[in-house]
Picture (tube, rainbow, N blue to C red):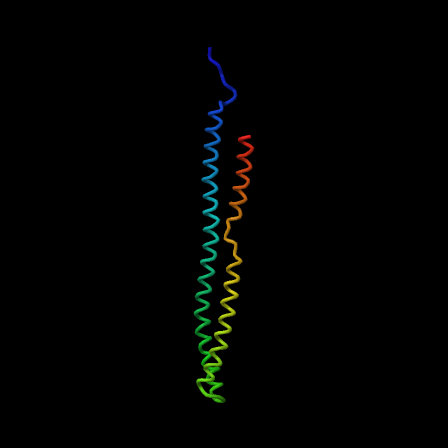
Length: 130
């Protein structure tokens, strides 16, 4: 007499759950990798624009600084005009660097979509095992 089973055994259920969890973890890792890669490429491109723009602006700034020193030198000593302009440029540079660092600290590198998805997966797994 051959008996047909309509319900899977406990072992089969755990095997299915293990396969599904393995697939789920692989998909989450793939999602996290994609999400972080996308953010990294955007940041890299922006840093490239900053570097090139900074180099061009630096050349222009040097010419303006030289002109300001020459103008001031017609009223005061050369060394004093260079010192005054140098201190002003250094102060401006300091504030710009601080602003840039503060902005970078506010960037959230966490893969939010992946974290949200993992939380949903944990809830799903809890319901599967209860």
